[in-house]
Length: 355
Image (cartoon, rainbow, N blue to C red):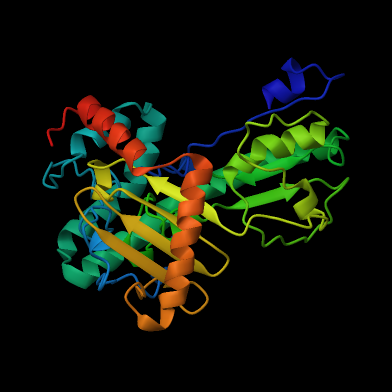
């Protein structure tokens, strides 16, 4: 806000990137929101207790709320007696130690009774899983409230200073996030919850309020879109496309498939290396390196991606078409098995991992 009010050149157009870290792990709420949602109990997603049948790569994860979410680092159970010993307790202790006296007092006042109650109940199994899920959701949503506050301040400033009509505001993220779907937290997998990225665009001068766009938009489209609105030529080597005409309903053609690749394995959360393609209805994923697994989903019939159809004869034609789409995408973006192998070698060398 200080930059908007005091440091920008007010007689010139401006571009401001405003990044929020609050929703990132470990979801530490600000003091005024410590008790927000205390009166709420959150029901988990229908597939919270997913057994990962037919999906061995998903089954190999280390990002489960029940078995992997750290009681101290993630859920703040930093008991003064030191009875709750976890892998990342020391890391959270360092975060706690950075608080000032006032913050620690507020934190302890709120969390100490919760810690005592948790230790007394000695939860196990399903009860522990649901308790951890609710602790996660309470803290996560509290941090989101702080994000909402910050975004609201910016929008209010634009309105109060006559900039609302002529300013493009894009509200987005670097990816989606698991809030209990498949029993998970974090991201990484190509499944919908982390693959789909939220995006809201406000530009009263040109975009009608309430417009819904179903086209396949990617974050690599942001740069060409901003250049388009600014009246600047878009370099030919930019892979994305301006979605200006798409949101205005003027795009006669638009992409019918998008590509994804994930390569940070071996690594935290144990998400296997994979790449894939998604169309408006289907998704094909290939897990590789120390596993050879293909997955195919009909997102219209199975939006939660619970039923792997790759070996279903009824989807043979769909599978063949998706393989063609995948190869087209890999060619378009210059991806290949050889490139993956070279990236893998550098990655393992940097991580000092033998293979």
